[in-house]
Length: 193
Image 1 (cartoon, rainbow, N blue to C red):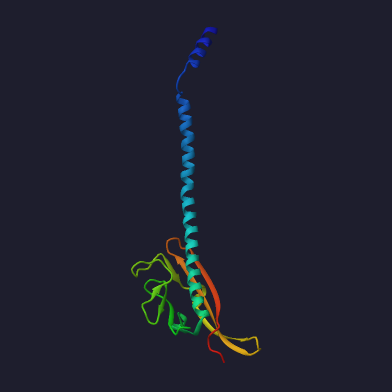
Image 2 (cartoon, rainbow, N blue to C red):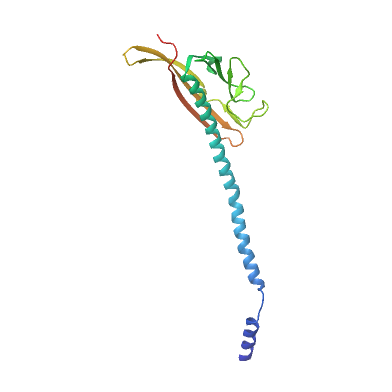
């Protein structure tokens, strides 16, 4: 009995390579790790897509509103057309500028002195609707509103100027993510009484 233990020890100590049990155990651990990573990958990709989509639509809305408010600040005249869906501005140079939503591409467009409308938002190519579109605002609120407000100047004189409110909801059609942004600005060069 003692001799068989010595023979076994000598056999194990002179072994070169791996046992089948060790190979199977190692492969099982690797398969479990790869399976866990594979299960997390779609969730990580979806989270990345939603984050990218949200950043893109927020940037789209912010840039569009920034462009509109910049024109409004220096406008000599501000009015609405198409039941509040089009903002018409006459700037300090006498140019007529229109901001409207294209029914074809669903993008916010700008038109200067009656020229063809150029898109400010959206990512459609060749006049086609893109994946980022301007949609109806919550509770169907108007995109543009213009009202006259009274303010006093430094001399205490009452002046009436235009307050323009802009509200957009932009949606990514691929992810369904929507973002609404609202801004108001004063057109200081508009009609004085």
